[in-house]
Image (cartoon, rainbow, N blue to C red; front, side):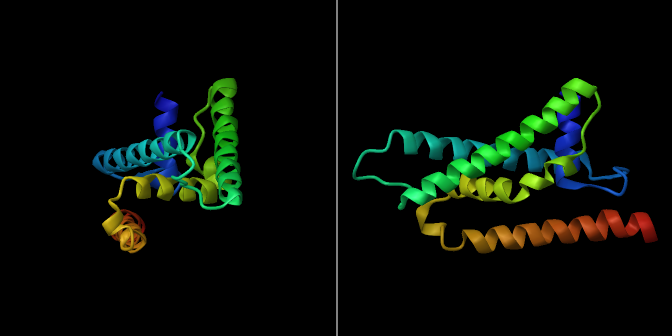
Length: 150
């Protein structure tokens, strides 16, 4: 469990040689957002499996295939990282999940988007970009720069 928390923290934001962590509250916020994204993705998968003929979530057949490839890539990278933790009994850094960063980010956004009301979905990408920019700026100005130049 502790290894998983370390991997989660270092995936999101633990800079330097993992010696510049964020305040624990930020990891809590990131964990809640990640949980909400997983919940939304689960709802999307459940809705897709129970989908009737008139209600189509994936407009094209290739979209369903692409979704399955993204899911498989993410699961395989997670399995590799977790198996290394179990076999070697060494905590793995979040950077070992970086090969799956594209599939993870797409699935993350799909999961969050599933829970956004349809009237706000046009603004959702902009909100995500602004939120990530502000988080990046906060990490840079309040953690990284003060550590090296403060």
